Image: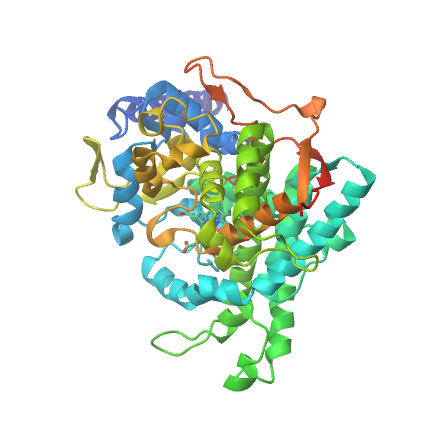
Length: 531
Ligand code: HEM
């Protein structure tokens, strides 16, 4: 017995020594011999993906990465096989010329691997077919055909603002925009408002952020994704359970929207003229779309995963962007006043029963509004997760003279990229729409990454921008807004100590998608109409 226990004791010591040796060898390999060892970054990031998981959970992932780029330069190793870059050359190389040789990485599997939607699809061939299925319903001509539903939703928002104006009530513009965007998405995608604006009820808001955070955090650790998917839902920890409940609520909502539309179309699906007489929406166009070669239609599961994607990708993004645009305008009264002058000079006054001007009029006549929207996307892009792509070419790729070996996950995080002073100048933290009238800066517009670029860029960008144009122009034509400072969550407008330029970047949080950390408390007043 004594001999057995001595043998066991020795065996465990040997096992322990081997484990310690393996760990040390792993760390030494990652730090000194791994093909990415020469790239700087946090020590923990070079040995485990848990570093990135932690960054997502702190809600500061893109901002920490931006600081790391400030410290280390244009390449940062942010995971054992993950490299982030802010090089200008990388934009075209990775996202435009990369194509099938630079597919999305496993990170995207967490956004729905069993039944990937167009966002999560890693197979580029399947993706291009799905994208063709969908592109018509996201085109400008299709959006113009649905414009009246945007107007209906803007009218409801304006009635709400008119009430606030008459009582002088202070309210949260961020929340008002969020409710508005959810209802708009419902109208455009599913032919039904979600009724959040009218009910003014937070509980009707789809818990999109919960899904985004869960997907970003689990996607960041691909080696563990299957285990996490299986075991995490069993952990009895309320904040975690809330994330799963949120995801399920969004999936249930998507499923209800699809089932309802399928029921509505059941009898007429094969009757062309009956279908044409139907109200247009994105989902209906998808239900009716056929595979370009086989003529097959999308399955119900495909439709539900795409509908889920619209809710996730199309709401928080647009409302956070509009909130940030108003944040910057209200913190820069001179710029706001120039914008309002442009609207007054170039647009006819809105008729009492006209909620907003037409997209056609807005897109042709408002250059300063366009520059403000563009500057807002530059200084505060909201789709801030690193857009990771796998290097598959045997010889790797060269970026700015650096060799990036095959197998590397290479990404641009648009916030870090839009704040690279070598590209955007020392005033990159300043909200300055007039920069886009300077030829050298204007030429850089092609580098802006707020919607991504290339074959995987945002399919909803026309919807998002037309929505922002219509909303901003019509609200500013009819209302004056006054910023009410919320002392408990004061946002940041400070001198940047390094560049001695204004730092207009507010405090932000990110679940992969970013948002203003604080509410945007304002008062509004109806503008006096002259003449
Ligand atoms: C201001 C609002 C928006 C921003 C900033 C934004 C940003 C982005 C970005 C950066 C990507 C590329 C992701 C990548 O490369 O991994 C993307 C993809 C996508 N977005 Fe948007 N988005 C917005 C609004 C919308 C809307 C309104 C919809 C739909 C209703 C939408 C649907 C999608 C889809 C389906 C994809 C995947 C496209 C593909 O892979 O082919 N987005 N978006």
